[in-house]
Length: 220
Image (cartoon, rainbow, N blue to C red; front, side, top):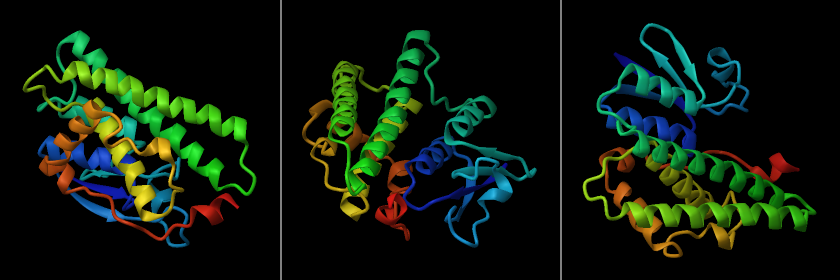
């Protein structure tokens, strides 16, 4: 089966799906879209009007990155992106949760800091969440470092695409330079784990690219 992935060039959500497709050896074409643009096609395929969207060659529309990944794992279980062992599977699911929530919290923090008069208490609370998640991921990847040959899983993909996406957003200039989002080097085990993932062909082929977006105007 061949798929069409409707995606946004810098999206960590779409990158998760693209990485999973490549890791599973599934063929796909990419169609880039700008959901807020006048010529967007996104509403035709998703009631959420959000990217990414995966279209099968049978015309089935699969949307929301979390559900797409669950759908792929159910339909194409090999090679598996979740461990068979129950404890390892639950640990991977927890890392996936932490990666996904970290992205949500960091995005909320970025948007708040782009407001003309950001709330200092609110910023402090979200910053504590960011630091707490990163510290927990550092603890977990320190423990995982002893597991030689451990297979990539959906937890790893969620964590890496989030951290790399935030790094890209700051380097691209759409996010303020936020000290607590400079994870590389600050958390050694996490840095090493993500660096290892970056060498995989699935990651190298899905590096985010800029697109026409003005977050400052969106917030305003």
